Length: 345
Ligand SMILES: Nc1ncnc2c1ncn2[C@@H]1O[C@H](COP(=O)(O)O)[C@@H](OP(=O)(O)O)[C@H]1O
Ligand SMILES: [Mg+2]
Image 1 (cartoon, rainbow, N blue to C red):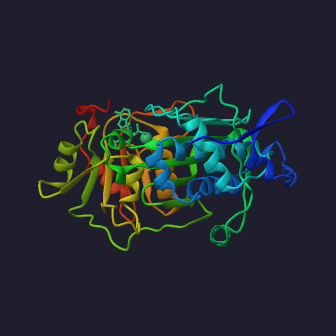
Image 2: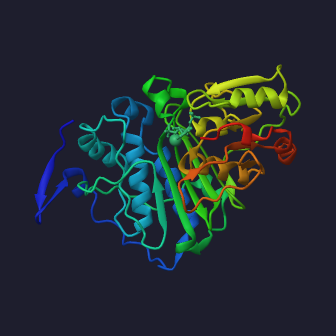
């Protein structure tokens, strides 16, 4: 899509951008602390804004992750002008036209004392910046009334701009999510899982608030177990061995989708399960947001041997995954077979 550009002061800016000035001054921030709440909310905004996210995805799969990740970057930087969604849409269409490869671009203006880990990487040539207007929607403000601040160096951010990539390439769009997670001292604290093709966003903050809840009942005896359809490893054998041959196994794409299957999600394309098990290696950006959501709602996501996963340091989790909510998680861990016998890789 062609987009009008004007030359001003040696810099190309869009006509729409120019019309939006003058704008409010940048917020004042204490550089030693990290405002968890606004950051989190900006991610939500990044996820839900725009007239037709699914439509944008059909035009170009990079659109939403790019919008999301740029919002992340911008909020992190915390000092730019606010913008409007219409502007974002117009502006994004230009650079995205040429990016249809599987790996999606991401711009991270990294805060020097915090870490941002993402499946995609910064395109150094890309100077565009997309901005958050610092308006927090009413429904979110109602849920989280007390903003938190934590030392910036304690924060690690995990971003998956496109989860269920394999399924996306097979046009199985219901599995696709974008995810952002903020961990503090390695503990998952804020999670956002967005389904671009359903325009549904689940978010939760540990000791903060959420827009999603657990279902009212789960089947602990003969659970429906949701597992990977494309990185399954020995998971079916493990599940049947643990819970018996009558157990229902639901193969599904995406770690974000599978966590949502444990919750009360008002989306007709969302299957429901009682337990999520994964036995192969998995990256932390695939699981951090789901872990934060579950933790905030009273659930658990651990390795198969019941250990908490630390969302700092290395980007891989090698101990497999067991996720549940409103169940005796430790009892589930004890039931699982000794997985030394099975491969985690
Ligand atoms: N053994 C493995 N090695 C690397 N990534 C894995 C993996 N198993 C699962 N994943 C990643 O975890 C996400 C969910 O996987 P699955 O759909 O198989 O459950 C996918 O993320 P992406 O789609 O972001 O790559 C997938 O690539
Ligand atoms: Mg992923």
